[in-house]
Image (tube, rainbow, N blue to C red; front, side, top):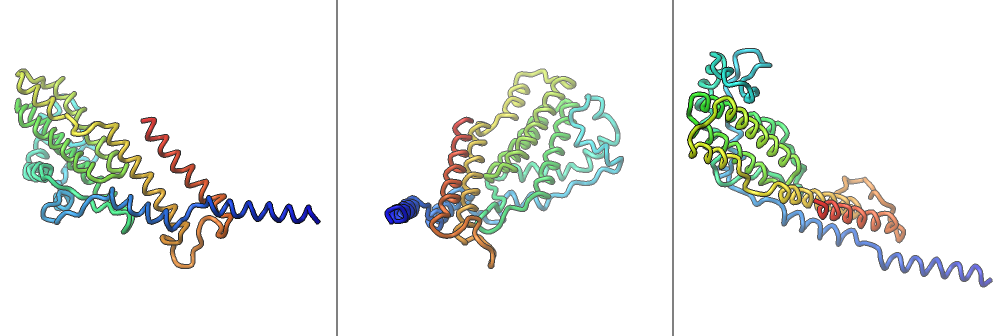
Length: 281
């Protein structure tokens, strides 16, 4: 009789120990929710929000071959920008370029990235934003080809400002688009310095300023990784606690004292993995 009793006591002790070390999904969810709130950009009135102003900008379409849209060929040789079709497209969008520059210089931007309300759905707008930045790259190349290096540097700087606007959202997708815009600006600068080389010191200094980042790239990536980690833990805690589950759905881990075998260990492993990734950057 001692064997069954001992086995039963062992099971009881194991359950007590397990319950004592189990993660409280509801408490964790509240902590995760507060962490998300702390990292969510603050709302901005629409009239001061650059993200809203970008939506009102529409590029005048290119009238030629859709595969030859000039603002996607901004690394071309200088003579490319003498083509009548390129010049026509540039002039047709003169007012649009001025509008993009004005919005890029706005001080505040909020893309409505609030994970507590709904997942961000800004794919089409982000694609449009890159196209707007491409038009600024075309403006820079055309101006440099005509000898207006000061104006070209301003357009390249405005591309940096668009990238900075993107970085007001804490997500990796915004960072990726920002990096792509910066890359196009640098490629356009490299091309124009080769084909339409600036001669004066002040022009070179203006170009150097035009590609200067406001924040270190690695620091920005770490911020994104931390936010993505926070969002992932928030989703895990919300699902396990039932706070984020649709009605009728069950938690991903079994209920009862043994759920810590999955939820607690997986949460600790997941959090530790993200901390390690940030530490390695």
